[in-house]
Length: 190
Image (cartoon, rainbow, N blue to C red; front, side):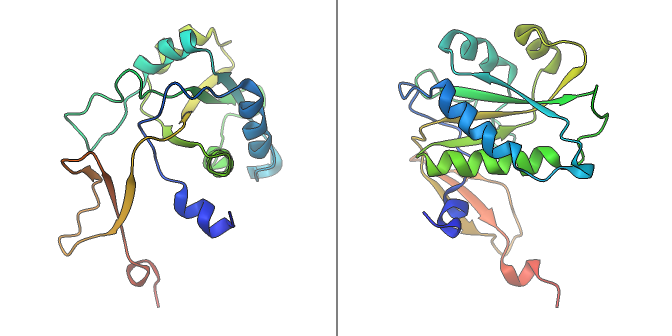
């Protein structure tokens, strides 16, 4: 896949084939891509907690909220949950500010996942106190985001934002997930 294809196929997937296991080596490879991401002041304050264990994944899952615009959807059902998670952490012994480092690092992770035939979703709506306890994190590590990973089982379609300007993603009666995107003409200021 070329970069254009990787970017176009990098969607926020929220339903996966839970039977498709993701090994620790794959997660380490993905964090290896994050390692090469740019970092403000080159501080590199991010650390990563990896989980591909089904029991631990089962404890992580209920600490996450899945789709703000899909109010009636409680998240993926059993069998469609992520096979792995990468929890992105701020190491406060290095810096009190992660600037935009997490976004750059997670983009690298997700592009690497797409290249491996996987997909993911960045989640920031997290019960952080509960997840911190579950993961037994030391006090100097703060949870920033969680990247949920798996083999996608949903179809995500990019559409143009309509005349009403509504940018909310939605699902049709067949479960196809639609994501409206603004046009280039709207994005580029002359």
